Length: 448
Image 1 (cartoon, rainbow, N blue to C red):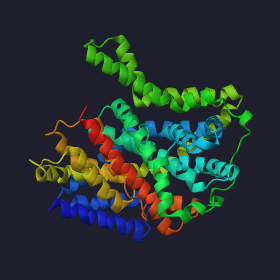
Image 2 (image 1 turned 120 degrees about the vertical axis):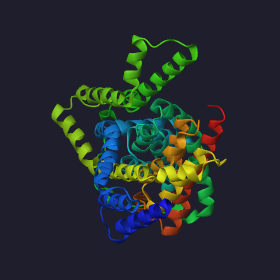
Image 3 (image 1 turned 135 degrees about the vertical axis):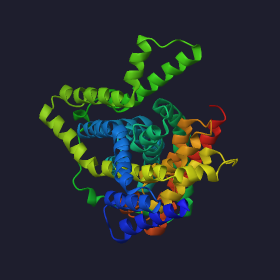
Image 4 (image 1 turned 180 degrees about the vertical axis):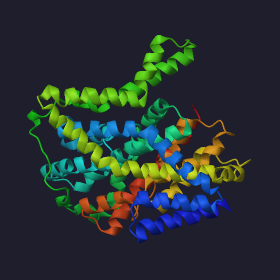
């Protein structure tokens, strides 16, 4: 049975990554070859399939991902991210400090990848905790919730962006629906969940944490950073451009207006790749040239950003190769036959498969890409909303982060928690985001 072969492939992946400590990208390529042969694919087609999967995935994502990394790095290195965080803290005041952290993390999280956002915001959160004499975890959980939700639901992050490309979903709609779903999900899994976590593991809220491993952090005097307005505008520009294009397109479709020169320009600007290119050019000026930073230093920041994401790009490509093997090897078609006539919603099925793979593999992106390979054939027989399919797959891929996920260990070490406390805070937080996110996705499916 094809599903047995997939199960063997996943177990092999776990053994290679966790047992033999082999690089994730190399492991994915080895398993892709093995699964392709076990599925009976002709030997002459195996390499072509793997290359097609890797190239097809990176071809859609590399431009957005690379420019996104540069944008985040420029905002960080200029002090723009610090300005956003500290201004919001001052505006919200000590009483509403959690909400300041949530809003700052949400804005910064749109521009930065999860790990980068975590490393950037943790020192700021530690400083706030010390100054206000509040628990580091009291601020850390809402921060992690906002970063995780933006990472799982919102383009131009790699997960939702690459899933949208594979499903053929409109990335603008994914963004608009994603924001609508993300806001209540962050509120529930952030400030509200923190109160529950405090009752479950009260001792964890007395820990002081440890960020020595982050090394010397670059800090700025507030007056030396870009203004709050321009920092937020630069961070949010890709989202603004994509969202505006989507809204104008929806108005055009609703009113039955024929496509014209204006709509073509709007669609071009609102394309994720174009939006990211415009945003990076704006950031070069607002975060660099306008602040008298030499062009060489600005370009050094961009080069450093690309160097930092090189391996992540390869891992995503490896996930794409595995996905393509599952499609070309007939596994997706087998799953489609298995659920033919089933009353289960494709949204729930995609979430369920992504959740099982996330718990097994650890990597949210690899889990999401593998899910795509299994459920794409189902979409031909269903009228399900593709943007919501992207979000349900993303939600499933966030669930139950545990010992096979780097995020688990980062959270544990930075906040000085033991294993039990990490499971009761971080793992529970990720599970809540996944389940609550799915709930809002299903609710939205009733209206769109």
